[in-house]
Length: 588
Ligand SMILES: [Zn+2]
Image (cartoon, rainbow, N blue to C red; front, side, top):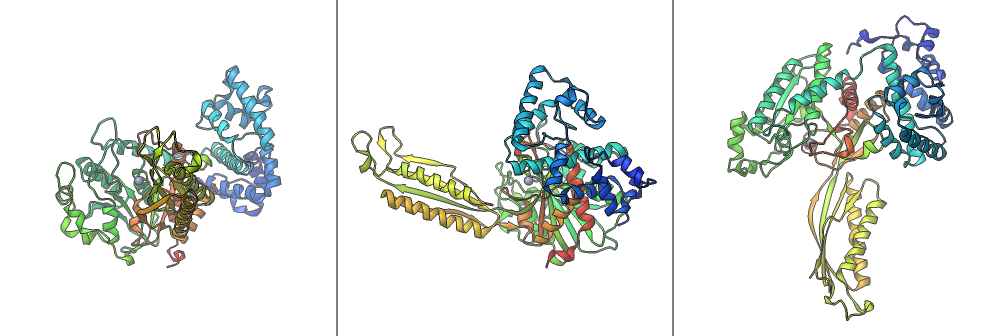
């Protein structure tokens, strides 16, 4: 793991020169650069990543009072100082770069209104790293953040201050930014051309588009110093040897099949990020004390055949042979399609990995939810993949004439069910790490002039913690019984689904969180509400996941979107994680 000295940009500086150069990285706060250098004289020879991490940790350790002083040192956006020409040169250039010097009179008025509201609510000015945003994006973010709680917003503002510092460091040193992220985004665009339907992305399992994508992936793996192949179950597997051949491997993967009319990032992002990370190691001739295998699973979405996760189950050794007997809507059998793809239905067992050949599995994936965006974080560390319980509840009352029966003499099944729905919602709101949904309800007989004699509704409860989920299920069912008892209603509850949670390995959560922190981002842990290949691989080895923010949490949709900055951040976190990966600290 030789450090790359080509980016030692502060070289040849003495301490005074260092402060002169980097003292303004945090607005009007040269003490941060001074304290960072005092704590680590090696910063005179450090690259941007290390400089940033060192200064950010000074700010984080400074405590809320000094942090508030730093926040207050920032100017209002499009504010009075800007009008009077009294900004620092950095702030002035940054604000002009986002077009804030060209606001219309109305926009300017809106900024002043928001500035006043924000200042009086939080006691410091609105701070946002404007690079890559236009003034409409900024206004939208401003309007959203003004609704945050003071605690949330204080942390969000600090995160933005750190981000501005990072951008300024890149600016000062001239080090190219987002090169890894940009290259990855370019590749994702190209990869999206492997589709069944031009103009949109549809790449179903074992189709010719899937095969073409797999061949391109193998070619990219080759360029990255890996040997790539298609395994018996139709997975694309590329291997990068460690500092000696045949070492156990860190697996990095996700899926390359998509839904119909999909986004470009779901699945593909994690696979190409893995290839890009290995390419970067290979470029620097870095060999690690373990091998790396990047896997592009084929069957995560389960769109073509009535099975799912067959690729990751094959790797984990839990492939169900019944899958070989299923067929798609055109009557093409799974086994036949697998053979045509280059797999081997008779040798699926050979795709299974032995536990001693693998160290852990890590998957980078778009969040497919709104949490990271709401908290203004580019990445988050997954704690586990939610387990789920589903119930069908049938409520029995007495159907009768809506005009003749007085209110006190009714047994209204729908009114009772409505109270039960609110009880479900209340349990969901009470729990952290718990979501509770009633997605369907029906009144019987369902006529405008009849008191409902029956009601049927569903409950869906999910949590990354099975204990929490089971306790919540019991509590919800208890509430429902109590409500039914009080209202004289009959109830019948049927459990229609029960799937346990997949826990991410604590050691991987810790190591991923440390990598996130070293990349200058507050590590945020969150559960996954959606299923992933990691669920199947968990039967083989420890699994961990890194989520990347996606716009408005949208996925399974061409509107799926991530930024080049977040792609770059995810790449840096993944690389940092790989370089620091310690299999001994997984707690086997
Ligand atoms: Zn996915």
